[in-house]
Image (cartoon, rainbow, N blue to C red; front, side, top):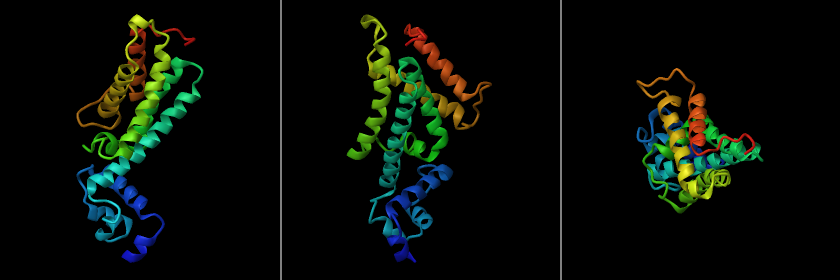
Length: 205
């Protein structure tokens, strides 16, 4: 049975998908490689043909997540062109949508404790995702006078921090936290306040 499991389809991807299911249920440190192997239908020994340990497995889940995340934000950005303002706001909403649709990937990316620099491939994927938001911020910040313009990297970091905070506090059912407002509304109004503070209120942007 283990031999059939090892030779089926793509064992490496099967292990990643098993890890994602376990991460959603037990958290990134709540499962073992043996459990992931069992879910994938192989022996624990087979796992080590592809991953040195649990953190390497989580790192691959995070890498794939960052690529999906980048694609989703890029799609959101492109959809609302040519409005720099609408396109930028859409990337923020995409952050929340990704966290809800792909919780296992999101946890692996941001809550597992695995460094985004653990492997060159993971670092590249994380950089690509950040790059989409930084590009959106760069385009939008061109409408701010140069003397008042924050660096695009700071601009995008503020939006990521706001998005991440809304996700962690209000979109993932954190114990003891509640809001009378939907997470989408909290994020949209928060981004709106931030952008108005920069003078970006022209609907033609």
